[in-house]
Every structure is written in structure tokens, then in C-alpha cells.
Image (tube, rainbow, N blue to C red; front, side, top):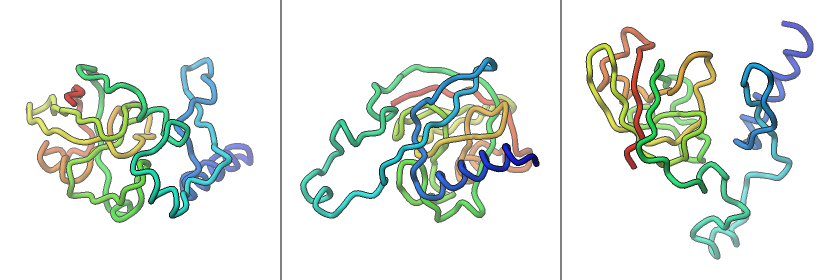
Length: 168
């Protein structure tokens, strides 16, 4: 791995680990890849903020979650699943990941929206809640929890063609 690629990968992993990775777009290159932008403020809030604000104010709210839910948005592509070492880790929306819940990671859909995922190989369906960002592998549109992958009967195959549709 060359030095520049290592530095970028290290910076990304550090930002991901410290919770300073933002979903703001920093710019798009000629191939349509949108690079992440790094926030300079801490993601932690003090106890007074928690007591005084049950809901996040506009200035603290993630811009993706502030968007109107795109009900009816449909996308077709490949799905994968994740668990194992990620089980028990913090997700992008701040909750602790439980691989047996019906959740998923999507690059742009708002957190907490519900998505119907249909396995195009066997027509099995499951409704998942978006609570994380990803997948980061090229060509994939959604990363499912192990629980959702079980219901779609895709664990043996690993990567399957799916259709997703936002339902709530």
C-alpha cells in the first residue's frame, strides 16, 4: 500500500473510531465518488445538554436525519451482511449494534427510516431500520444485520441481489 493511500485509510479509520466522521459531502470526483468530510467538533454532549434537550436542536442534528423520509424510494443492487466483530460496537447513529436485530447500513438514507428489502433470488422480504452507514464495498447498496440476513436466507451465499424500498 502506498504512503498516500495508507494515510487516507488511517485518517478514515481514526475518524470512524473516534466518532468524528460526518456524513456531509466534501466533494465529488470525476467517477461520482463522494468523499467524507471530517468534523472538527467532538461528538460527545455534556450532561446538561442531555437534561435540557430531549431532542437534538437543528444545529446539532445530522443533516441526513433532518431530511424528510423519502417514502417510496426504490433501489436495486447487491446486499451483504455484517456482524461478528461489529456486534456490540457503536453504530453511526450512536446506538450499540446487535447483530440479531433487524437493522441495516445504507450510505445515504436517513437514520431510523424503515426499508423493505427483497431478496431477488428467492423473493423473501424483511423490513429493517437504518441505523448505520455503509456498505463501503464497491457495488453494494445495503449492509444487513445477521438477523435480517437469516430471514432473507442469504447467509450461505453472502452477497445477493436485492430490491430495497423505503416504507416509513
